[in-house]
Image 1 (cartoon, rainbow, N blue to C red):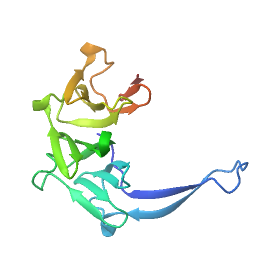
Image 2: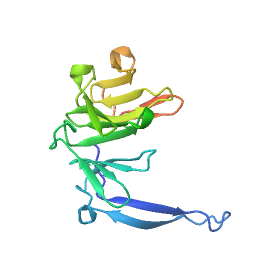
Image 3: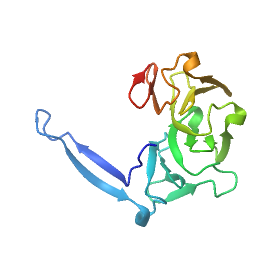
Image 4: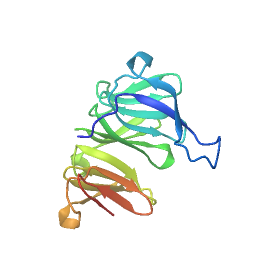
Length: 189
């Protein structure tokens, strides 16, 4: 399991002062958000800013949306939201949707204020996804301990070592012109 961040900290990199300066860059903490400042839970697993400006924070207690002043929380405790409250990964989809990987609850799509959940029942390879990424064609890739799923046009295609993965236990993915997967000790593209 990936270790969570203890704090959500906003940093600013100061690189504009002297372009030819070879000194180490300086970081300034702008704000720190923990429970006293409204962050619902201090174990942060994923952070994403979407095109509409919201900052989304995947936490052990669900999903928090930050508008610059307040956090709004979405979790499995509320009806018609997430199936599980530990959010492992986030990625922005097409048309302003947000995709959420939850530990034990599959993946969920948040669009226009509504959640749609996909689990093994709908074809997802595992209900315990570890991360998400979106490729250049708009497909969503989901990693897990049992392989990788690709969601495109509402249909899942699953990949394991039988289809050429180096290992079924995939921890992370990153989409560049190609999709790169990470394991405990290796990477492949």
